[in-house]
Structures are given as structure tokens and as C-alpha cells.
Length: 394
Image 1 (cartoon, rainbow, N blue to C red):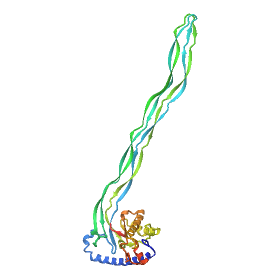
Image 2: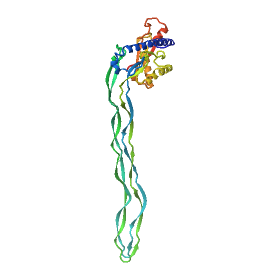
Image 3: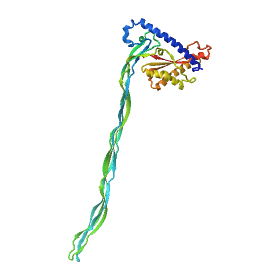
Image 4: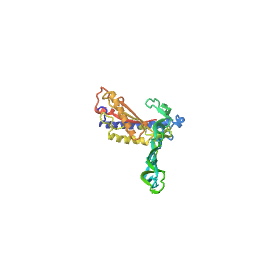
């Protein structure tokens, strides 16, 4: 079926592996012969070649990775402020005795003469009423740099269009600038803190009318006792007060990245020579889909994930192909999605996406003559449905 793998793929994969093993043996012998013939010619470039190379081994030039460290930064998003509470005034009840008519003397013949007077008596003390004004806040923002601006050298090359036998002729050293990255954090500012005012409140007075002597009695003196009145009063024991409570400041923790060691340093990585050319990755997809099966993910773990963890500086290209059945556009799209699904899976396992390249070729690179309009068997079509990988020079 178009874009799928079946049991014929296994025989095709085995045949491809046998052919590549034969080509690899021939390539190693050729490499040894060329190393002997051109040893003098390359002596001038010894500083650009791998140190202490091993016969029959292949080397690729890689760039070291940037080393980053994540740090936590505390940002004040709300300052400390006060909350004020009013404690009510306290009173106690008391009784006082007011003389409403003092003792007097009365004479038998000339009685005393009295006049009326008014006296003001306070029966309840006043207190200070407190009014609270709450704290007022404003809004602001602060800008954090979580990744500073930095520059580094990067090697760029196109191995597919390289026509030289020396891959270094196709490498270009570029000085790349990475801009500063910032994040804006909203915060609150204290515009006016809490305050209070006092105003006199309450208090009560009454008017008491009493009699006083205008003219004392004469002649026979008769003592008239005083007259009194008992009044209940409320006495202020403790005035209304304010209790202050401090609300602590609020902080927000942000994570910023700091460049510890810049990468971009060229190093030589020893690699199996057969990995620099396309290798069949015997994985399977659901029919017409780019979703990986559980068996395919297990194969990727063993063949690719283990290699990229062992060689943390290498880059890998994933190529996916289909047979000629179906439209060229749909086959190209399906192959690209299938290659991308392998990249996405490796990224989910912690591999940096910068180390991965996904390429879908659809039906453009058939390994046999089974193109549109040619009658081929299912086994012949199966040879064209394949996913490959190869190690790239950085």
C-alpha cells in the first residue's frame, strides 16, 4: 500500500545492508590506500586534521555546545504594607451624689429666702472616634533579562551540493549574533500607606436646678438638712486605640538562563564510516500515517538515541521515502511528516532539535524503476518505502 511498510521490507533491508557492508570494506581499503598516497600532500594541513587518526576510521568536525545555567531570581511584586484596626473605647459605670439642696437654717419668725440656680453635670465622657483610610496601590512593571546577548562562531556547510573531495572546502565560518531576550513582570507599588484621623464623639451633660440661700433665717434658728440626688454615670477607662498589623512583602520567583561557557569550538569526532552515508532505519508506520508504532520507537532507542547520547556533538539527518503510488504531492508530504515524527520523538527524549534534520523525499529517489506507469510487484514497491539516517558534519 502507498506510504507503508510490509514484510517485504525486511528482505529489502537485509539486501541493502549486505551491499553496504561490501561497499564499506571496499571504502576502508580505498581510504587506507589514499591515506598512504596523499600523506605528504596533507602534511601542510596537519593542524586542521584529527590528531592521532586511526587507519580505516572516519572523522567529522563538530562544534561544542553552549553551556547554560538556570538561576532563580526573586522579584518584588508587592511591597510590605500596614493594616490598621480600631480597638473600641472601654467604659465603667459609677454613681455620684449631687447636692440638690444644701443644709439650711430656718427661723421661726423670719424664714430663709431661696433662689433657684442651674448647674451643669457631665453624665457621660466623650471619646475620640477614629476613621481608617486604607492603603492605596499603583501598577508598574519590571523587565528581566533571562538570556543575555551573545555571539559565537558557527560552521555552515551543505554536504549535498559539495563537489569537492575535501569536505572542508564546503564549510563556511560565520559569526552569529543571538539577541538579548527579556521578560516583563507586572508589579504593584505602594502609592499611599494606610492612615487614620480622630474626631471627638459622644459625651453627655444634664442641667440640674438647685436652690441656694438668698437670705438666711433670723430669730429662731432651725437647721434644715441638705437634699441630695444619686446619678448614674459612665466613666472612660480606656480610649479608642489603633492596632497596627504589617502585611509582609510578596515575591515572585523567575528562572533566567546564564551562559556559563560559549560553544562553537571545533573538535574532531571519530565515527563509524558507514554512518556518514544513508543507513536504513527498519521502522514501521501505520498505514498512510506518520505515527510511530511501539516497535518503531524501540528500534529508534537502540539505533539512534543510543548513538546520539554516546556522541553528544554529532548531527543526524533523517530521510524518509515512499513508493510511486499515489500523487507526488501527497507522497512528499507523507515522507516529510514521517521524517519529522522521528525528529520529534528524539527531541522528546532530550535530544536538542538543533542536532536533527528531517527531510522527506517522497517518490523522488526510487531505488529501482518502479515509477509512475510502470507495473511492479508489491515486493519491488516495498524496496522504495524506507527511512534512512546519516551523520552530518556540523
